[in-house]
Length: 151
Length: 118
Length: 341
Image 1: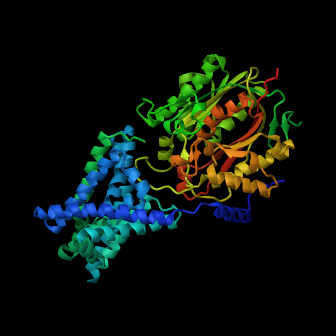
Image 2: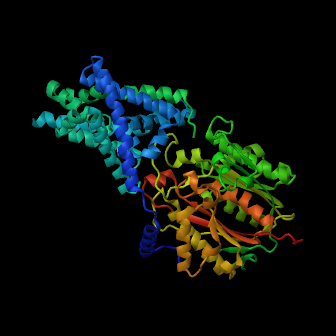
Image 3: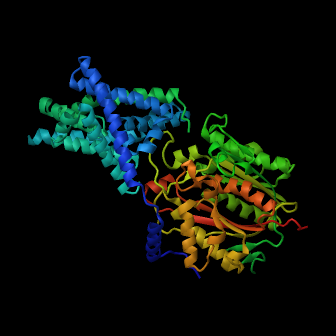
């Protein structure tokens, strides 16, 4: 007769079987393409920086302008349904650059459009951007406070 | 040369992200990756190690989201050293304002114009 | 005081087996590109199915599959006593909104992806117990609605591990009746909720396999049958890796099913469709059973099938709070008995 509860031992035994049957992840393939795709996006970024520098912008301004341009392109590609294919293929190569950040804002906002402009688009723009800004702004603030008191 | 450096350094930073995903057997989602990079970027920047990377690789260091963390951290630190406590509050977001605004504006328009294709 | 139609611990043996008189199946384009395309009633190319949202599209698919089943049996809505349905969306809106349109007395079910088999088991009991003459049972799922609810919006760039499955876009419905011609439901084994401590939302096969194996073994014990008594044993949506785990777990329990065993999630797509481990979702077992398996039974290529609907009983909330993923499996025996009066 099988009892109702499952013991920890049974769970551990099963975990072993699962591990044994789990397919090998394609780590080398994934890392290789993350490098290529991510590198390529940065290369495009460099291309824009150089253009803006040649227009007489300062380094800081050129960086900002290039980032904004990349964000625009990523929003467009997300809307056209292309960006998710880039990340599916390139993994972190599509996620880590600022274009991945833009994609993570546009994708949920687009999908929840049917739920209205406030709770749909407005709130969902920040599903992932929210945590990113919270952590980024908090870390930067904490670093600045430490600088102020100890330098 | 600056293109090659941007490619190699940017690609390498993305490889670290990929390792985070693969080595946690995908428990690390894209949200985890982005938060980790922005935080790590801000911390490394505060320790003074990110600016040299930017000087070396340009877009290779500024385009990955760790560059966004660097921007926030440098803005806040410069604000604090120049304007005191209030600068720590205003500096970070001010420095990153262009990126944040671009993402909100373009994101908003994209959400209105496009319909997800599925 | 033992129930006359119950045998063993979890199994019901129907004294007068209910008949599956009609089925309806509607699928999306990816399923329509798969190897079973010819067995479905309708393939819809547009993920929106002409509606404004994917949720509405899923609803319309379920509605169409039920209409199709009614039409094939030459029946009207008021010929049906009860409707049983469930789906994956919060508060099973695809089912309740379809029931709103059909106007048939309705009971909502939730068994995650096992819902087709759950509704078959419950519907067969209603008929076998003398509470209904005709029952309409069905379920649906949609890749885009499920993906957004459980994981990420579909346009968001993410990478999927090899164990990840692809939610089937499709709806399947069946009409069960006391009398008529068609395959019959002879047994149903109701599963237990089993949690072996698996918590990976990208590896549902591993979470559900223990429940499937438990129900299959229990079915053999309750009925005294062996794997050899069946032409085919088929699970709902364990896909490639879950299937191997189920085989292994049953081997440990002393049953070798490998020669006659497959999974709906493996059959529905071909290897070249980039779906990783295979199909999943309510629609997976529903359309394969309503389409492909019915064809096999009606043509008498198979005489007796043991189907096990499998479900992963998680919610996005339970997952976020770090809970493990419990699974369930409901088994139903379907026989083709053409000569039966």
